[in-house]
Image (cartoon, rainbow, N blue to C red; front, side):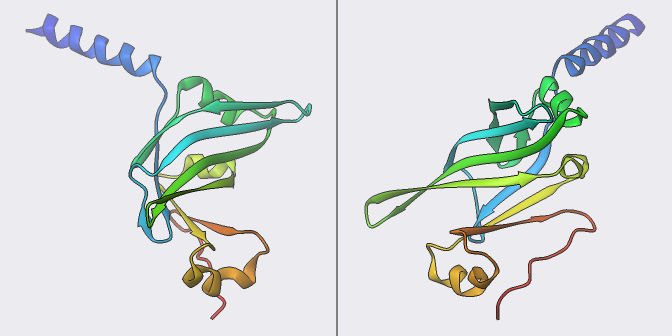
Length: 155
């Protein structure tokens, strides 16, 4: 019995060493939880020496899947800027529309117990009216996390 328990502990320990830890992250676009509407999810890294790196990652509702080598890049002192990019697909009246979102992330975002990324796409008039005065871009983003701030609407 002790041998089986020891074997199980060793196997579980080795399996967690080989894989990275996932980031608890939920993405919603225009107050709708993103389940399968996104693709081409990338983490883009810019380094102090001017070089750039773009790595394809997976997103499942509630989890941003990050391998161990990505965590090393995120924590590295050489990493100057981290950007999350993804394509968001919508279907209206039989037509497919694609929006490309680019969200700058800070290193402290990756240290949070959870992240909620709100994206407000100004193609919908409701959100353009509510947040359009805050930016000239076609969308605005906001992160919610423990002790985080909130986005103030235009009125």
